[in-house]
Image (cartoon, rainbow, N blue to C red; front, side, top):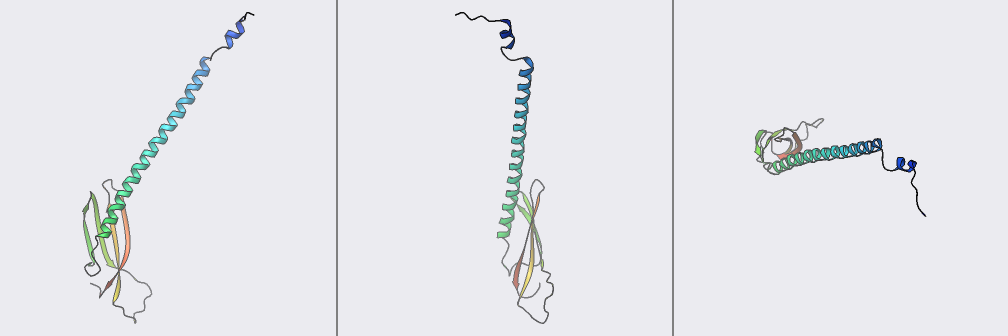
Amino acid sequence: MLYRSNQADHLCAGFSLIEVLVALAIVSITLSSIGALVASTARGNRSIEAHLSTLETARAIMATIPNREELAIGDRSGEMADHQWRIEVSPFALQKTDKRVSSPWFPQSIVVSVRSPTGVTMQVSTVRLRHGSYK
């Protein structure tokens, strides 16, 4: 049996130019969305790495703070791993303390500020007890 093609079959075969353009538009929108997602993820990773670097520097500085007896009230500053740091030591302000009770211990407020090369600043606050009197 011979197959005869009629003219209607030739008109329906293949894709029209409109269909190809719509498919290309869908593909380009999908690829641009994926590209934007990848760029956003890369920016987020750089931000997290910078934050972790600043945090590691702050922890290293906190680990090198002198012991209780050597830590005097005042400010210290320096630089470590391209990060500028500052340690502020001050008497800790106590509220509602009984003045009649004396203690050989007094609290000190310690604030460590670290500024990264990108300008991001991180601050870590803690309280230490010091034996003796306010100096």
